[in-house]
Length: 204
Image 1 (spheres, helix red, strand yellow):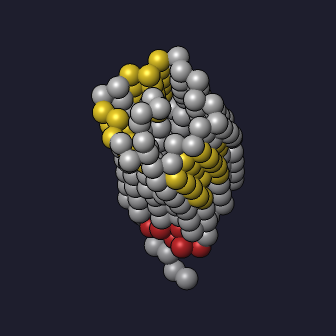
Image 2: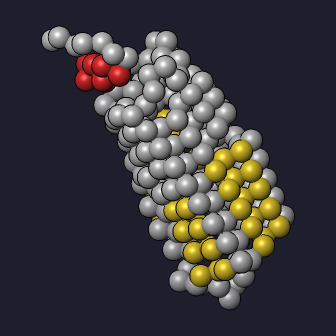
């Protein structure tokens, strides 16, 4: 983004490589089909920004704060979101590979169809996030806070949910044989849902 760009502009198909955007306010910015290669976005902030169909490779989003922004159908490769905070953000259909995602805090937002295969998510706080049909195969969610999320039809094969807090989270369509549940915190409704999915007859 140059000095000639304004928050209302749509930046389309640009490549940004090795740039220092430390601490910038990206509120209202719109990037479509852009590539960010080794760009420093540490401590950036945004409200209502949109990244759509973008590639972020080797990007540093450490300690960044985003509210009501979107990273829609983006590809994150070897990108760091260490200590990032996402409030009401949309990550619909985005894919993460070899990324640093902890500690990470999120409140609400739509992350449906996100791909987080094998992601290291131990201890992350994703309270109230919609993760419908998310791919969390082999992800490590040990000790994660997933309260009031929507994990309906999420793929949790081989995922670790040891000690995770899942109270209030929708688990409809989740294969109960897929993840490890050891020490996971569930409410009564969830326990009944899982028991019935395993063929048990719940008699309260």
